[in-house]
Image 1 (cartoon, one colour):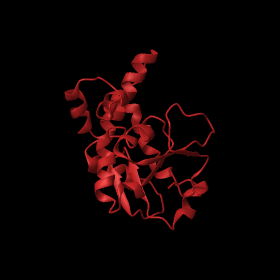
Image 2: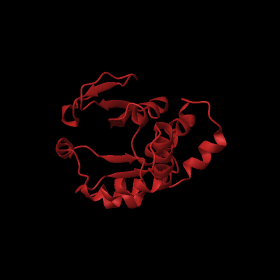
Image 3: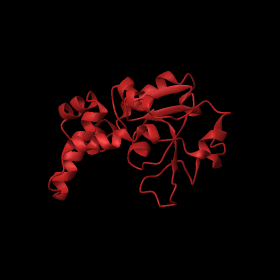
Image 4: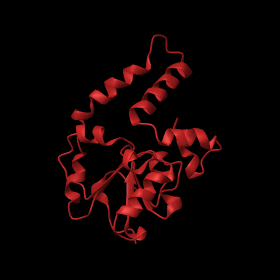
Amino acid sequence: MYKLLSFDAGAGKNDPHTVSSLSRARYREIGELSLEEAFENFGVVGGTADLIERYFELFPEMQLYPDVLPTGRYRLAVVSNIDDDLLGATRLGWEFDLVCTAERAGGYKPDGTLFRYLIANAEVAVSEILHSGQSQFTDMVGGKPLGLTVCWITGTGRASRKQPDAARAGITRYSRFH
């Protein structure tokens, strides 16, 4: 499913009409399609796409990583592939300066649509934006072609297949990149 969404980022050669329709799909629909596809791909018998609801039921239990809290001196944006209702269900305990959801932008990472939404609404120059994320695929592919500085939050210390501008074990280890 993410391979289809990566078309705009130049990572695939999929049918643009399929990608366009997925860009307008709700996150829940994409979750169901992805789970159904995974069950089929791995031969899971009895698995149904409605099981994705168990994942969504966990959103109220999700929390910010503790090392995000000391970043208060910076303006922060959340850039997420989820919809507003799911973000609202997540108890982050933090007011972000900018909220960029797939629902608001009309597209999903790594498709450049969500990153263009961030750039258009950040009220700072592209060179002043540092995008950090843990996904090598969704966070590192879509922003770099648009000029964003990208930092991969490794968490595990694994090597990256893509080339970020920097890699950090956690968010508190940021220093100036420019």
